Image 1 (cartoon, rainbow, N blue to C red):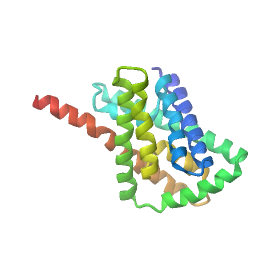
Image 2: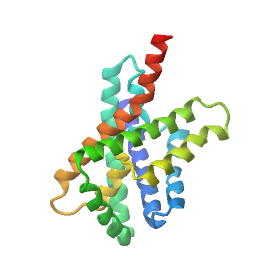
Image 3: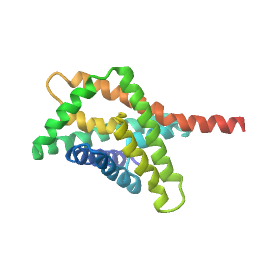
Image 4: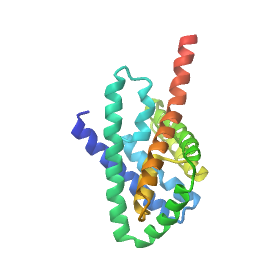
Length: 210
């Protein structure tokens, strides 16, 4: 995928995550709202769009890792742009959602870096399971089971998904928060990546022992 195409794809993925985040806020954050959040990943997977948390786990299995790291940086930035654009639109069209996001942002920024990292690890693991199940499962309906289970699971459990958090934090940002938000997103990204690497690393270790 060329860099411009990759950037556009990642911006669209960020927009979709932002839209699903708005759906979740509008649902009153009930469990059914967590299920509806899956709409974004359904579309991202079926359309082959670029989502950081859906791609970072495959860094372990790539031979051209430096190229992959460059792609992941483009995807991360594109996801951020897409989420920021959605946050601006939602803040204008649905001011009540911004109020909810402000409360959510304050709570998230009160977490320590260790908490953010660990919650990111658990989310990254679930995201890898969801995406890899979609990629490898044979059969139409079965491909979506991982998404339908793992996405609501990480939301209900309160795990941290860096791209979803890009949307919530950009929607709920207030004066003096930018530095904390940057640190939060970087730590969460590392946590998501480490969680997504657990199963591929286990697979590599098992293959060597076999």
